[in-house]
Image (cartoon, rainbow, N blue to C red; front, top):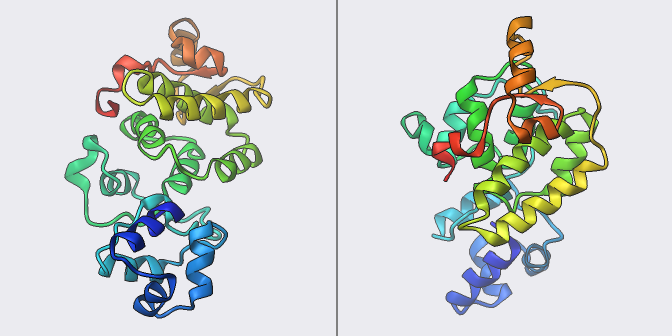
Length: 226
């Protein structure tokens, strides 16, 4: 849930901040901080909001501390977030913030291609995610090329139907250009053979080449992302 969503939900119920605080069992000060966007929602508070019938946006799920090394079923989590390609894997409500799921997926040395193909959708669907956090984590992990490639694919897909999202994603991508890494990388497929690498040096998509990646993924191939 975004702070503006909480204000809207409160207004629809004709509640004051004190009314909202009583319903959630918190202080009016905390509700005020939420609405200003200066205090994150805890998982228990998001659960209570959901019980009250207030829609909770996945971008507001708490970012987990020490998440590295935690086993993640990416297919299930993407299905829970609404990705059509993994609808059959859905098991309930999302458990991971989309921003953290994106960073964890891009950190994988070897990722199922179907999961890799879902990442531009994740970026496009949740384009209001915490980009400051994502960029910071990407730079700490040397993932800016993989992230930039994902953004490039997503913003091209957004051009026709989601101009606001396209502008946001393009701005984030351009901001990453200043930290472009010169080393050649793969799109989470480090186990590819030397012959595969040689082939991709000739056949990589223009989006991948611009980010020094070996990948033949193109916007037109991402059938589930539109």
